[in-house]
Image (tube, rainbow, N blue to C red):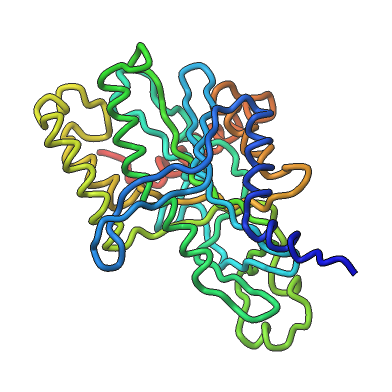
Length: 327
């Protein structure tokens, strides 16, 4: 009998998965390359080189979508389970939080879909765990999240420099940093109100979870990542000059130090897209449909936005009626 272990070794290396993802991106006319490297301190605070697998850009008009992709090949028996999250709520997670639009130095062109939002392409979730036939692995998802998260600040600073210096011949380019984990593992989102007792009683995973092809993983910025982010933004401010940056800033605040602090603590990153790789690239197709909707909304999206606008108007009208009338 022929020894076919080489197949397993090759697949587990992740190279075939990376190649298939890159091939799909090429079909979308993306500009892509393998491996993006950056520097950050390791657990001993010694600066080392880290990387994520694929760096890709999808450019349409004045929208520059940058895809930061980390690939994780797993066999078909591996499941990734995530706790359910919610859009809105105390965290104010938006449907498109994973896009991380950077328009802080664009003069007039701004990301237009904050209120109302574009429709969601995936359900939100919180922390996850990898389950294999040998047990559970708590590190896989965390490591992938970290590989992408620590690259974000450098990306955002680069976006700001491009806008300030008009390196693409104009300041009016909105950049989007879209961190993505692509895996061959099965994705599951645990149902709301699932209890320990219910888990003990069930024999079928689908009784307590829904199978998904894509999820929006809300991330929490820890102290070390926050320190890393602050360091890079501080270097950017010191190098460019706070006064000069404040004159060019067109953001939610007129103080670049405050803007960078808010980004460092809350939006770097805010969420990460988790995609199950399939032969038909179903989840990836949904993502690129969203990109195209950002540039030019389709008819269904137009209708959705109009309906949402009407709903918001009606809601505001009800709120106004509840306010005490002025004498």
